[in-house]
Image (cartoon, rainbow, N blue to C red; front, side):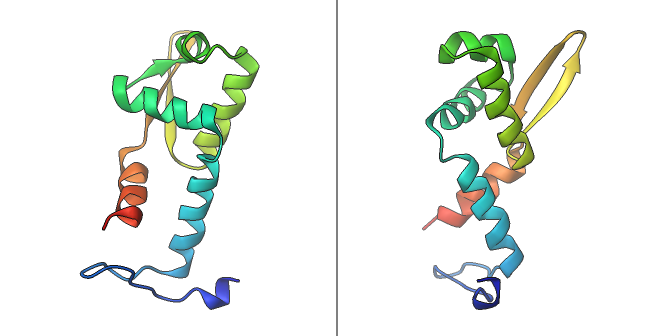
Amino acid sequence: MKEHLTKVCCRPGATPQEADDFLEHAQRFKALSEPARVAIVNRLASCGESRVCELVEVLALAQPTVSHHLRILREAGLIECERHGTCMHYRLVPAAIDELRATLAP
């Protein structure tokens, strides 16, 4: 399918994108195809940073389930984490979110 994806410009004034960009965007959108992951991204967008225990409480999901969703979002490049003592703190990767926003912008 990649051979069919060449430079495309979908909106006036948009910069044409390379086929590799489409694959990366698709992987990120796929990571957002699960409601719990959308909720995690929404939470991180609203509070800036969150720990796993906070996400477990807000989402009312088991810790292994939340960790699984965080791993998928991290592998997609949408979030990053940093260790503070014994806790992992998660936050959005602004550039990744901006790229998805630009893909959908009119």
